[in-house]
Image (cartoon, rainbow, N blue to C red; front, side, top):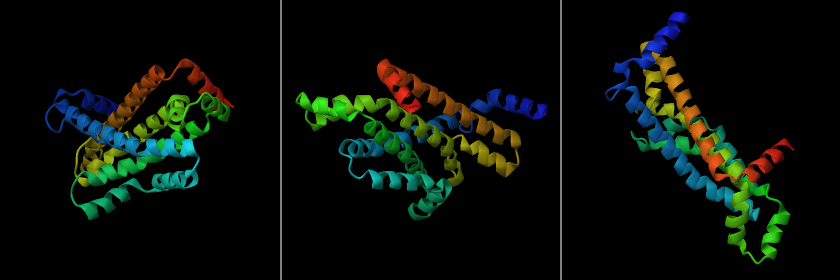
Amino acid sequence: MYELFSDLGAWLVGGEQWTGPEGIGHRLLEHLQYSLLATVIAAAIALPIGLLIGHTGRGAFLAINLSSFGRALPTVGLVVLVFLIGGLSMVPVYVALVVLAVPAIVTNTYAGMSAVDPEVRDAARGQGMRGRQVLWQVELPLALPLIMTGLRLSLIQVVSTATVAAYVSFGGLGRYVFDGLAQRDLVQVLGGAVLVALVAVALDLLLAAVQRAVVPRGLKERSAASRTA
């Protein structure tokens, strides 16, 4: 076991492992591209849905159940299916990652909007605010802690699952996992898995810092109290 971890450490810090088109640096950039683009696309789809159903209270049952259905789909199976239909491209990978990321964003956005005190909405309307003003100036700021949590969960899931790009002969850190399995190279497999885990943790910490910066302290305390209750 000691020898395995020693070889893993040497593999991770080896200079030759970080250079060239097969190096960790290039694979890391590919992985970040897949993950961030898929999460941005998912957010562009899911945030409006979550905000709409949370603001109006309509379509919640259908939207949440469709999101849960998307979460239950096997990612690799979806990649292969879209791959067979659409041919050799990154489209199947992005479709699978977006489908994976949407549920958490929709669910948390809706939960955040639903958690807004109805009396706060009524008070805003009583001051003459219209529907859009209530949404953007009252409901959205109050729902922001849970919305950010949904984005963090989705990003972590996408980063962890973006290894499927290598399954259909594309790049990313999953290349080390699949190539290592094909070559029976346990060190390479573990190296790929460790790198994916480190990227997921680093991005989560980054988004946590962004959340602390954009969410007022009072809202964070209120959100924590609500979760405790």
